[in-house]
Each structure stands twice: as C-alpha cells, then as structure tokens.
Image (cartoon, rainbow, N blue to C red; front, side):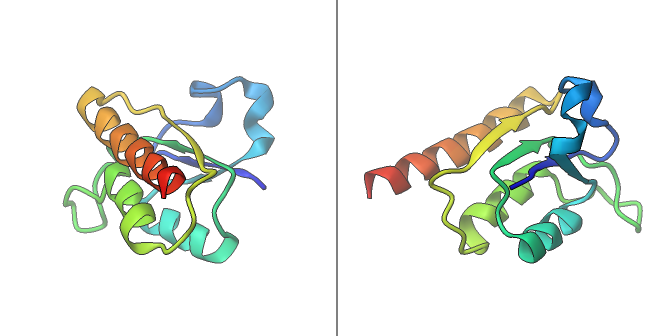
Length: 111
C-alpha cells in the first residue's frame, strides 16, 4: 500500500529522498486526508505536517493533529500496525501528534 504525505506546501523531496516520490500520495488538507483514507483505506505509512494553512474562508484550517485525532477517535480503523512520521516544523504540535498516536497504538497492542 502507498504512503500518505499530509502537508499544505512541502513536496516529498523537501522531507524525504527524491527517489521516494513515487511511494507517496500527497494530500494538502484535513478534508482531503479524511477523504483519501475513506476511499483508499489506511496507508501503511503516514507523514504528518501539522500547520495546514488557511481554509477557503481565510480561517485557520484543521491541522495534522486534527487528522491524527480523526484516525484515533472517528475512523474506526485498526491502527495497530500504522507507521508514521511527523515532519512538522511545529515542535509542540509534533509532540502532540506523536504522543496521541504512540499512546493509542501502545494501548491497542496491550489490549
């Protein structure tokens, strides 16, 4: 299964080796993230940015943490084998995403 890259501006080669570009599908918004997973299922690997810019109304768009929360609380998907990376430049949000996903996956493995 493909890898998913959530970021509003970066390209794959800004975070990973250029040779990995074909391994990833890119989504730019929270809504596209949710729609992608609903249509294609859970990817093997997700790379998260947190700050996803502004929405169509000029408001702060739902972020990568919102996407991680959707996975945990709303998607109904089994995340036990999910691999992920947080490539966000926002250190506080990075820790939030990592903590949420790591703790949830740990909970699943101990259940």
